[in-house]
Amino acid sequence: MSKSILSNNYECFVCGDTRKLDRHHIYGGARRKTSEENGFWVYLCRYHHTWSNEAVHSGDKTLDHKLKKWCQMKYEATHTREEFMQLIGRNYLDE
Image (cartoon, rainbow, N blue to C red; front, side, top):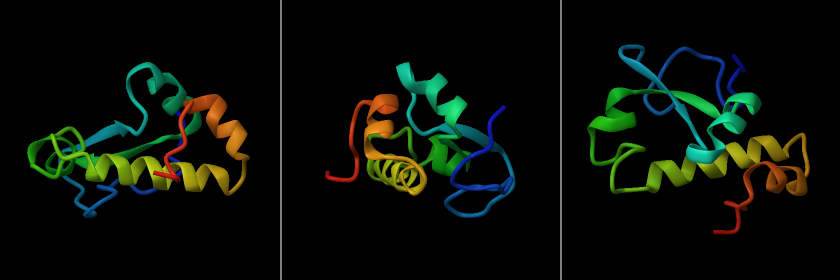
């Protein structure tokens, strides 16, 4: 299991809650394995993962997009944009 590149804490990345946490892969679907291997994940409480209108897995993609941008910025602090693009195939910082 990889360490998250965004947080070393066992708490919701958004609110700090430590109850009912889910591991959220920031780039899911076909990129889920890549997320796991590179630490592109965070813990989220159920409210921020699935339960609310603001949740990552809701119709509002604001939080999802922010996580993708933050993760790309953190990765590019030690890697190139080209390396990120090879892994994910999309640049979230210019959107």
